[in-house]
Length: 121
Image (cartoon, rainbow, N blue to C red; front, top):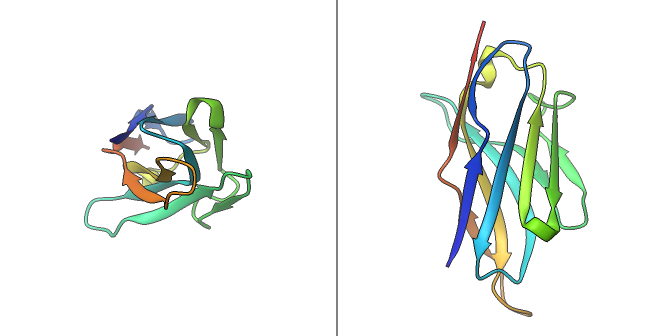
């Protein structure tokens, strides 16, 4: 079994910063794409940032220039550094990853349980 566990959420004033972490554990051979999503109350879950195994990244327009996604492949961990936070960044942030169990196996998609980020003005 595989688990994704997020940490680093919290309450922060507008203009502040937070660094989210998500560690994958369990029967892992390799991890392809790792992603951060967020879901605000009453809104659909949206893709915030993606990083693939080679290091290429992609960001939603809403966070581009303010956030940086990175990963530590040795630790099976993905990070999201968020700066210049705004109240509209308030949401539950979810980690998502494509994970294979052994060489040549297909990738399976996993979600973390989410971590709350609240930005107040």
